[in-house]
Image (cartoon, rainbow, N blue to C red):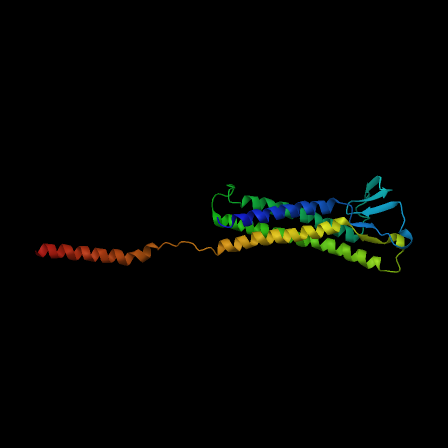
Length: 224
């Protein structure tokens, strides 16, 4: 199977994207304190994530608390949770399919076409994972920026973009590139020229000609 380095690069990038997606889901730094106006000098830093919020006091003590009620959460947070969980599951499935489609893995036999389809499916799932990560990350970033420039919101309630959002964008790019490489490998493998042997029907005229020559030679011999 050709383009073996392409498979390796696609799967490695997909694995890195999966790890980044999981880290983005678990990290609490989606929304962080904004040090502006009267909040320039503070001794507490607030972090708000999908599952918990944390308070860091004087850069020494860090206290985190999980959200108590699932139904009391804002709809935006619930949707972001669901999309990120689906993204983690899809990335894991894509990685397993990609490993099964590798050249030296024998779980699907030695059929190159089947392995190419598995790698192509893995690439599509990685790209789909990137889309599922991109939606909540961009959605949250848009809300943070909108509230930051809203004069009706108090300065102490304004937030800035956290490190988890930047990690989500980086993971999305990695997933897109890895999935694109695997899809490109699948397309290149399908366009690869294959040797086609003639069907038995194409050999029938030659066989008939040989039979006629044999009959003529026998007839001439009998006359002699």
